[in-house]
Length: 181
Image 1: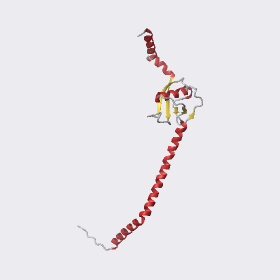
Image 2 (image 1 turned 180 degrees about the vertical axis):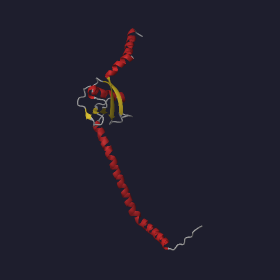
Image 3 (image 1 turned 90 degrees about the vertical axis):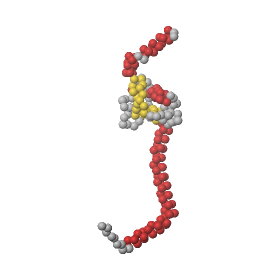
């Protein structure tokens, strides 16, 4: 191994030494990220919410790209970025070049999407489809019950009428009851 290679390895070891890493911790910030993925075939995810640790000096755009690249191994052509404080609705970020230390507060969530418009449209459609499907299922049951009544109604009424007459006939007859002792 050449002298230059050894020196390069020693420098690399110094960069990763515990003393060096501890001093760098002050420039790092934990970031809660929520992915709203539209193209599930390209960006498969097992968890929508993840926590990343980024350098405070990264811009929102750079942090978003790193989150996508770290988790999915790919960066979409366009990334939609929102920020959501705890207990509030998401807000769009106007300036993507601002550093994350200036825009993120503790408890904020960075929301990243590969196509937010299509994602929201799909969520709206799936939210509406359940009541619509329920309505049509109820309508189908009512139609089937009506058809059943039309086809079998007279037969059922005749059968029930015979059974009721038999029952009333049974009640009209005198009965003797024996007491068993």
